Image 1: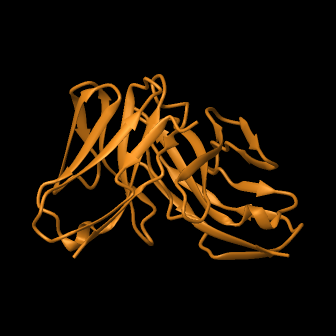
Image 2: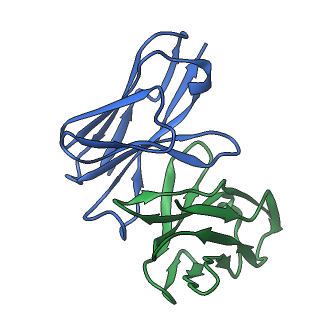
Image 3: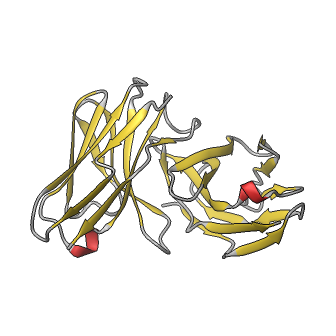
Length: 114
Length: 111
């Protein structure tokens, strides 16, 4: 019943290459988010979207960009991957105004930059 | 901005023991409060929530009460099971649903 899927699940890339991660939802939710998870840091917000073509930065947005051309897809791009961007990336969605509903998370993408 | 302080782990308990994981937060206004659980190798799942002061969220035997006066949202369970072994995250949320996550508390329950 996965209403949110992330691709790829795993990726190894070289330093300096661009990388795009995809988040796809079938719930027609307005809000979508990209977080990264690192040991000792919990989850930190990279970027989020509050509608088609409406995006904003989170607390760790440097080196990342996003796009949302359709309600169902939210893309995260690492312009030039660095080793510090080795992490597990989670996409999340939420309904309505977002504040009271909580997130549904994707299964994550494990990215290794070598 | 918001910040969250969670009880440091790891926490190791025997089956049927009582569990408390402390969570305190700082925030402007009145955030909604959430607990998420992450089982090994999986994404996070919403465990429970509370959206206003004195609300009690509950699910799967877990409970947490929104305490505005102490800005806390401690997670409790009366009798833990081995299957509860996971990482637990406290997360207040406001402003377009953006959540701030604690560092997570790893719980291991031994038979």
